[in-house]
Image 1 (cartoon, rainbow, N blue to C red):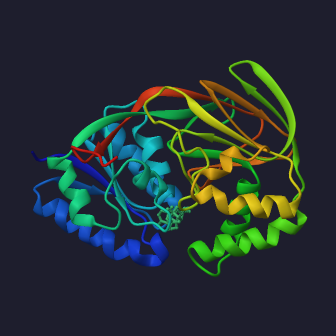
Image 2 (image 1 turned 60 degrees about the horizontal axis):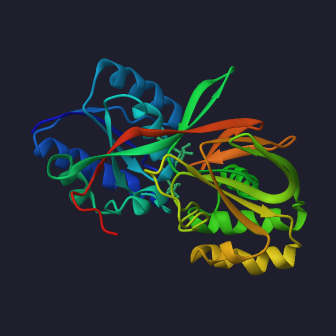
Length: 301
Ligand SMILES: Nc1ncnc2c1ncn2[C@@H]1O[C@H](COP(=O)(O)OP(=O)(O)OP(=O)(O)O)[C@@H](O)[C@H]1O
């Protein structure tokens, strides 16, 4: 069935692969008979402004072509509306798409799902403050070493892709000191010095770092990982284990479940879905079933 679609392409995603994949998505959407409004912009802000207008006028589906940053944009456009989010994963990490069993770098499979796939409701994280209002995230919010690295990587213009993050880690690690946090989990307060705190709706970020390997997007709960203070050599030893999710047995790593999380730390910013997000303190809550996502009919386990 033909749908009214808002298309947002990030041509810079996936080290520039997004441009060609976006052109292919547009062609396939038109060939499938959908009414497409292309709201891609020359930058993120322009795309967001154009997309907001079109979504508020009414669309069936928002299709984003890019990485987790574009998923973040789509999540914020579709959260708590009737619009569905469809992801053409064209990024370097594509954590959200992998977590949900969506096609990765396969435009025709992703576009075909608009008609042949299913719609699944998943939870989202919502952060509200009096200044910018409501903001949402679909994957993982991190406030600590990950956000410092993310901010450094976003300031760098070279190299592109994963290597930029690896270099940012090398630059930040020698000067990083554990951060004094207060973490409130459904009202229970923990005060600790930690390397990072991650509030997870999905399991992974940063291109397969499975910070909370048991996170479930439909359980109405965040998985919250705290990596307590570690020496740099000890942190370097446990760090590679995050790719298999086996870091969770390390004595310095704790995982909790909660509906509401408050994070406090002085002068610390957060990242969410790989995008620079809000300054701490942050109050985040899970909103069950807040997003409708286009998925394969049978999502691989
Ligand atoms: N024209 C544009 N439209 C949208 N975003 C853009 C654009 N140009 C640059 N960007 C930047 O791209 C970033 C998002 O990149 P995205 O996540 O889509 O791809 P990626 O970084 O290759 O993938 P991943 O996040 O999965 O590693 C945003 O921070 C945004 O500022």
